Amino acid sequence: MQKKKKSKVISMVGKNDGYAYKNSNIAILMSSPEAKYVTPVSESMQAVIWHALVSHPILQKKKTKWWLIFIKLFFKLIIKFKV
Image (cartoon, rainbow, N blue to C red; front, side, top):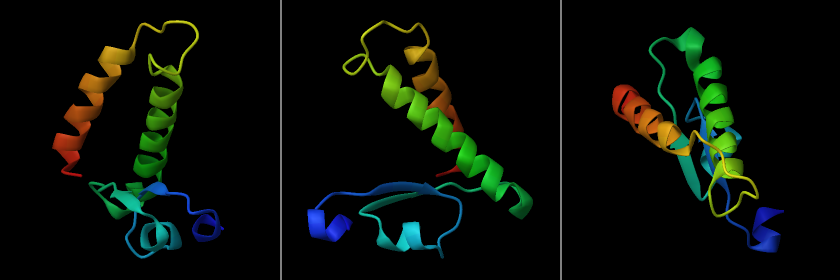
């Protein structure tokens, strides 16, 4: 459907052998310290990104207080997990 509508797909995944990773325009692969944490780490980061999108100053109707805190935390996690 994405190709038919010419939309872009961005995915955040925990493994590089799945459908989303292989068929996305941009795939962010989240590394995990251990294999048993692949799903919890990737799903947790997805929730953080969703929150960031709905709280982004351009998209929001009411100001949130944690936007800058999120940005700092997110980049610390990226550096820590070497995404």
